[in-house]
Image 1 (cartoon, helix red, strand yellow):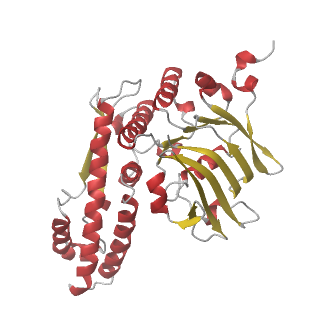
Image 2 (image 1 turned 120 degrees about the vertical axis):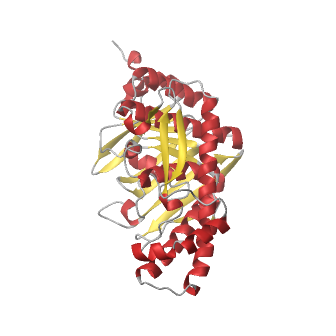
Image 3 (image 1 turned 180 degrees about the horizontal axis):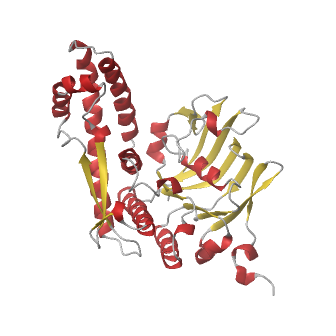
Length: 377
């Protein structure tokens, strides 16, 4: 089982304080728009590597107007063991991590906690620029390979250094060799992790019997093909220097990759599907991700689904809840009203998120709020 059994927020976004006691079941958060529901999901997302569901800076997450910094604490149940995890930022500084009272880092956090998410900003993933699709695939790849984050950081850093040389029109090969060796090794790891993620998702979807359509995925390279080995990639970077000097930037590598999706049953490219079909394909991939992790790790990841219920019809909404419960996933879901979660019944913990004196408040929902049929006549 992988789940948070407690969560505390301090001076985080709209939350001055929040203290949630959890039992491992799915979590439904409801309340008006702007009440602070997504802020809680963002807090949960920070117990995995990266910048969270909003990709915000640490400074942007602090509560205003105090701007003192913020702190998140949780008890994480993973691998039949309980971990006390804290992450925080002081006065906008880079966030820090502590596991069981010992200083740690985000890579180590990724070894014990895997979190996947689907948020409204991702609804346009099939029709936006390739960067958004790479980011979507990278989050899935990271759930299977925690070292993917380190490879990505190394690649971005070395590519910035190489691009600086290119813009300054440096032509001496000696300046490029070390940078390109590091860049090619990290880039090859990135490509391997992405392709592995695509293959795993295909296999997980084949075993699925849900109300959600399956997606055919293909990882392509906008400028041709990605070299098969790190050495081939290094050679490609060397060969491309003249062209890159003219452009002032690197034109070959995994930063030029794209993810193509197809609605398999219809043979229609995802970018040409209806808005509802595009959303259903994304839900299908998130469920496949969870299913694959359960098979590989013995437990599914924590799943964050922001406003997902409002974009699904009643049949698919009920199917989503059944799939979540069948997998044993601690899914965190948000919606504007308790009626969106009625099909969950007693299978979930429900909290109402509201506002008071300029900050968000979180309270367990009353039975009659969550089960309209229980209200006195």
